[in-house]
View 1: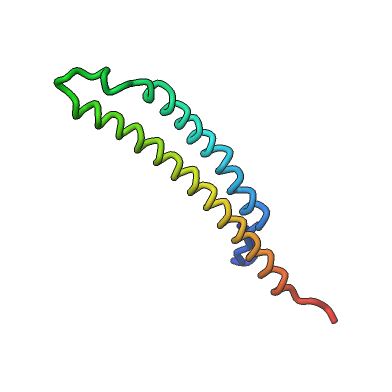
View 2: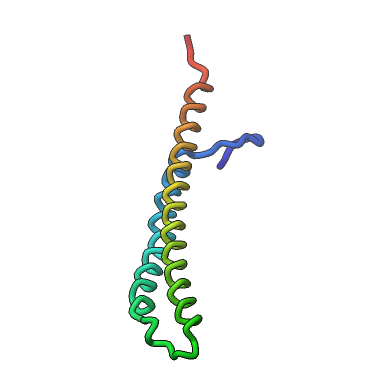
Amino acid sequence: MSGAMGESKFNADNIERFGGKLIVNVGGYLKQARLDINDAPRRVEASSFTTFCPNLAHAYIQATEYADVDLITKERVLLDVDEKLKTTAKILREAEKKSTVRGA
């Protein structure tokens, strides 16, 4: 965002690229977290817990499932944000195009 004399001017290209940067940077962490959750935590079986803690075994399994689904949801949100940023950039380009004064 820049502009002279108090004018706000947004750079559509930067806005459009920002979504991709989010997907690469934040998405990379989300994917690694999913790989980590789907590795060792999934190998733990309910039978690994003693008979005194069956509720803990069920809670552990459910927490692992919840975390995986939550990370998938966050990845989808990133994709949605990317699409919205691309739409915003497109609207900005159209607005700039339509507001440009053309000579006769």
